[in-house]
Length: 333
Image (cartoon, rainbow, N blue to C red; front, side, top):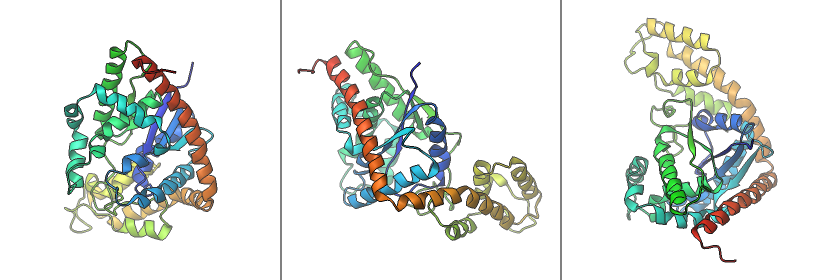
C-alpha cells in the first residue's frame, strides 16, 4: 500500500516557540516516519498583513527552517519547501475560485476573527480574505490525506472537503482527495507567559532558540493563580500557566501530580513550581538550541535543503495540476 500524505506548515513571521513544539512539531516528528510529509514555509500567506515588511518574511524563512531541522525534522524523511516557489499553487487556486462563493469564504469564523484582530486601515486586502481558498490549493496540490491543524482551523478543512467534492462532482472525476484533520493532543491553544495566546507579535512566547538565561527570566514572569494571595492559601493548578506547561512537557506525571496536590492544600510557593518548570524546559530545549546553532551557522546548507524540497514539491504539484486541467478540459497540448 502507498504511504499516506501529510501537508503542514507555518507562516515565517518569526522564530518558532514552545507552542509550536507542543502543537505541531512533535506530531510532525511522528508522521515523518510513517507518511510522505510535506512541510511548507508559507511565505505567500504571510504577505497580506506584512506587505510593507517583506524582509521580515525573507529573514524568518531561514529562522523557521533552522527550527525545523533543530527539532529533528529530516530532509531525508520529509519535504521542506517555500510556498511562493511553487507556481502551480496559485494556478490551482484560480480554478477553485469558480467552485466557491465569496459568501462561503466569508462565513469562516477564523477569517472573521482574524479580520477583526488585524484592524486593516484601508480595508481587508483581497489576498487576506481569500487565503482559505489558497490553503485549499496547498492541500490538494499535494493530494494530502491528512492535515495537522488546531481546532480553530476546522472550517478550513471543511472548506477544502467541500471544494474537493464540488470539483469531483462537476468534472465527473475522483482525482482530488478529501483530507482529514489531525488534531493536536492539546485541547486548547498554549497560553503565553502573560496568559494570552502565545504569539510572536505579543512578545509572550518562549522560543526554541532562547538562551538559558532568557528562558529562566521568562518563566519567572509567568502569572500565578490570581486568587492565591499568600503562600499558605489554597491554589488552583488549573489557573496556573506553569502547571499548564508542566502538563505538556514534564514526562514525570507523578512529580507534577504531587506538586498539584501540595498547591491545592496550600503552603507550596509558586517558586517551587517554576523551578520545576525551569528544570524541565532547560532540559528539553538544550539539544534543540545546540542543534539550531549548528544549522544557523551554515546558511548555504539550509538553502540547499529548501531548494531540494522545492524541486520535489514542484513535481508533485505539477502532477496534480495536470490532472486538474485535464479533468476540466483545458489541457491543450
